[in-house]
Image 1: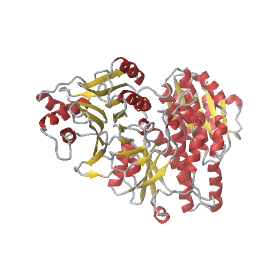
Image 2: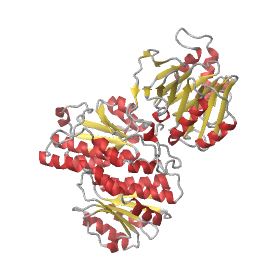
Image 3: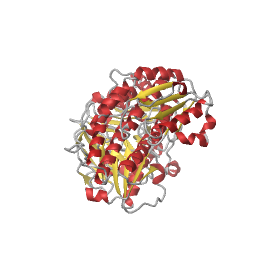
Image 4: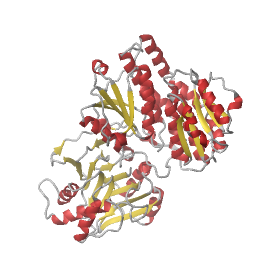
Length: 617
């Protein structure tokens, strides 16, 4: 959840670290700090609040140097206080450390270290690790042939850690060495000319180099100004693979937009186009995916598909369930990854597992993937995180190619996932009983999506007016049927995430079974209705709300004939095939949530208590 930036090279490290933290602030913004290696020890500055506070503090109190580590925090152990802010320096002053993850046995470590004379000034699990490294460092006497005394101490300390970590560590006696290690929490090495950057996300690296090494679990890296080496837990040298980042810094800038979220909403036509690029057959009758690593014959043997994920991506899984069952006639189950990894779900031997994750680092989704593979199931991933842990550990998968998504509330990544779900339904359907003609029609519909989303985005000003009208309400219901039910869930989540309004999503027909008790003039209902056989059913649900004086916002397709007296406000989306309607219906919900949050004065890109990538349990 937190952001880590470390640097060793020739540049002034302070400004480089601050720039990296600004780019990683979406990973955590409770507090931030940095430690610069100075002549007489570490120069440490820590502040609660946003990185801007740290910028001000370092301008008054920070030395120059060419080696340093920094951190922006999303609190897990201990409250948001300066003493709990990273970096943590061991009580003997030898070790400075920043950490992402959760050390589960830190209490036992702390008790042991207190008997050895180490003291503690924070409530964090991280400080226990900094002192444990210092303890082992004090026990080591000399450097080994191929490793420093410092490196050996870090390695020994980590062998006692239970839990997850991504760390950057420096030692006061080693001004020419920066050490990183990971287990369950992402860590990346940026490879430059005479300099190296250690970070938890490529966003912090991209302005300096496009060459990166993705560390695997249980790997450590030692960096000097001239070289770096990677070592596995078994103390074996690793031949690192240097990858190239396929986007540039402009992709991660806000540009003319007020917020990243708004920029990313308007980037959806391009993101959806990229999700389709090169993925249709020459005769335009089916989708093609080169990375599934399964033959058509093997896919025809699949009797059931299990989708698992968390948060917004879980809603994409639910849409995938509707689409695949309808178009491919394969039974689909959807599980929360956080639940699946800890329960013994009975799965048929011919079950195919799919995980969906924007970052490719979500800890619960990674755990579910590993559990599925451990039990012998083929596990595939749909992810936007090229080079991510899940992308590397899955048996195959599909990249979204949506580009960097900085806003904490997912927008373009979600609709990209819906696009890939529809394409997957098409692909699997054509392997089974979908006709050539139906395949051609579905490809045509999919290709029309970017243009239709562009058309929907033209209602931006109207949606803003509606949002301002409803910004002060404290409760909302979001209602839809069939594939619009997961879209309703997503709409409710978006509103909760960025405006802090209580909102719930339900199948429209389920309203009568309890939620109707909430209906009043003070609780608006957002309905999503598209033309088709159940449209009249949704109208009946709307009438039930109006009969109880509830306010109704209706998102509906153009051809729907809606009695104006039934709705207070309407947002019209283009007519389209059922397979792509979830994508089109999502866009107005994103804009509605965005403008409500702005009207309430909320920090849209950095909503309270949330971080972009959940890498801790």
